[in-house]
Length: 73
Image (cartoon, rainbow, N blue to C red; front, side, top):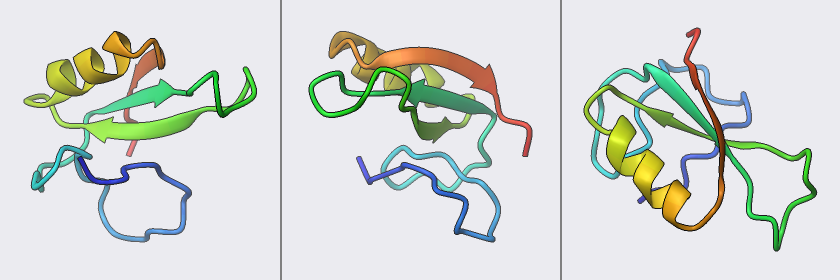
């Protein structure tokens, strides 16, 4: 997977964070690594409909996923 964290600096269309995917983002997977981040910190991976489940499973298996919301972009 690429480093799909968003920081607002990209002015292009929001695309899925799955490696090689160029589909538009439909979901924001908000997560943090409790060993590295403060509890309130959220990093964001973007997901298209096709990759939402696999990205959610990846983060969930590690205990990193905090919430999933529709992408408003």
